[in-house]
Length: 385
Image (tube, rainbow, N blue to C red; front, side, top):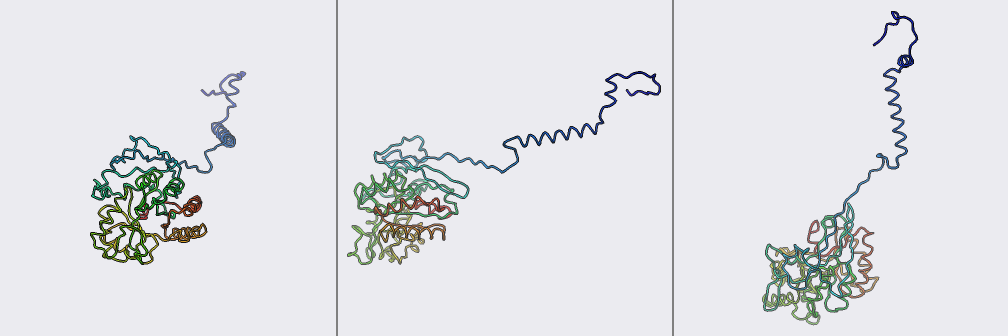
């Protein structure tokens, strides 16, 4: 309580009373505390090694890679493909080692292990005939072109980066070269197996175990036939439909596990709509794709395939038309330019040792160039399909 000192007798004040009388005002105390707080905050900011202020940091979680394993060499149903975790991995003695493949996208890098594709045939994707097993569309509209295909991440399919697919043909004719290609080439390189080799199903399954997608190379009548002859049971432009379809079935029955058909020669057949139409209709019926190489300058296959509603793509260049390291390197440079101009490009070639070595070395530098190597099936999907 305040005191009216005029009415009080004179006396000496205590120390406490004198201090209270000299107490600072509320405004002065508030100002002092605020100033001390700002000074303390400044000292803490300077002394702290990782202040809240500074450059933004974004931490992105990359999902764990999923490995698709080859579980068996026996016939399996395509439905079993959906539950691979319950399967055991069977390693062949000369099976290709597991490698890592890196996909560069706009938002980051997706890393996936080298995919081991399941052994063929799958029981619900085959039709038994007098010639052997033929591919067919399975229950639930499961097509060989989809079930036997190599998985390509969605980030790759929808990426705007240039993409290149490489198809090497003549596989199966020389087991040593086929084994080398399976072991040394990136899994995204697709193989076309000729129908005339030995132990084709075994070779195909080893290639699939190494991650390589497979097509069937179909002999078609070229110009200058029969002097220029692709091999037995070649599809002919003047043969009747029954004869050509029977020959087609023979080739189809040689092995299983292919996503589609690619031509071998065919300069004459590929310009005969009458002969080509039933072939394309058969591909549609059996759920297969068609890829045409660049060996034939003039062809009507795209028009016939569209009318039959068969997925169709064409190669831009034969990469080993000049089968030397320099010639192949030049062709691959042209393929890169095509991919950068149009978003994707397809190159076809043979399984020659010189071609394999050139492709193996070339593929090592694609990441730095911003180009993605994809299997042939990727060209029929996503933004490319």
